[in-house]
Image 1 (cartoon, one colour):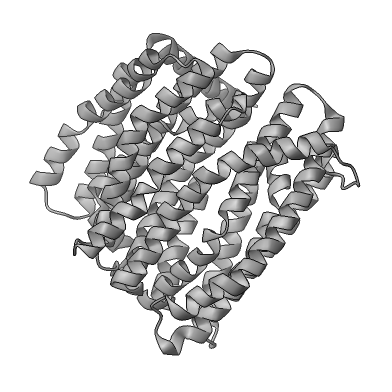
Image 2 (spheres, rainbow, N blue to C red):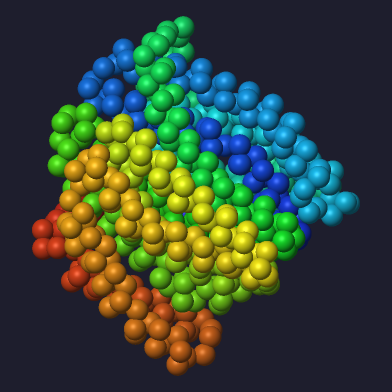
Length: 494
């Protein structure tokens, strides 16, 4: 994971320098149009994983195969629909609404069409990825993730030596990597999981259940697209592609840092479904509460030094970071931290399958992000207002998510705030002062960066051990570390 993150950040730097700020912004915003249609795919991805995990929890191999094949049919239909939608409505939007320099329109069209075809292959990949998730083979994602970043590293070198249009070449190479990775994923799943055998099987009830579950999920995923890619388009319309590049850089940093916490959450999702399938609702709620706490602490541990030293790190990384990218990077990381305080709560209702009220309410809340952003931009506020609006909405979600979940899963809200939210906030408050004092009193440079990283690690670790974890969690952590050290020592002796 660390290797993947470092390589990804390096490739982002080289791509930005090679393409230039404008072309980098074009790639981000044009590819974002395709992502706007992807909410249909995201909803079915959640539905597929939920029902596969449920079947695994009940040890029903026949139903697993039916679920997989039904999911494949649905995803092929989604892929075809998005291609048709993209080549009509999306193409019209690209020609008539996007702010793209006239001389770069041909390159932008290459990016757009290749992104659409790449999306089709990604859509039909979802049932295979859901199988890996449901079987909790998280190490496979790590191995394939390393291969993916190494292939993208190869793209960087090819991009440098190529003498054609850099943006078109980059789009073609990224499409090639996407196609190759999809083939590898499918080959692995076909070899490892019997349920991935393609057959002409059908179950009308399961088809309706999956579509019904996905239908309510679609509201949340549509709002997610609106608050990410919708805002990206608003930035393009009000500020142009240069600030799209700034947000793209900030998002790249946030995605790479957040990937550690996201992979942890990914491992929790199938466990919640299996616990519910076995009737262990209390254990499921405890897992959800612990998941909220651990995912936040993991993200905070990694992001805190970056938030403080964002200016120096981004200058060191990009040499000449795009205008506003440092501020946006700090704000995006803060926004992700606030969201992580309660993100995992939503997987309780997902596991139970009663998501109508939860998803509809949260969707309406998240749709306020692009609305607030649009109003702010019309009033003349700066580009950073898109992140401020996210932060406001995530604070509201912190209180709304547990209230909605309680109605479905009987979640104990008092325990959630006591054991997760309040402990996390105390960890932040206690660990912050010393690194901030160092930041204020030392000149910017590599020495300060090194001291800040060491100080942040020490302060955060001590705060987590003393405040973030309760006594039983501390014992479990110490026991785990002790066992790992003992195991490593034994291997070295052999």
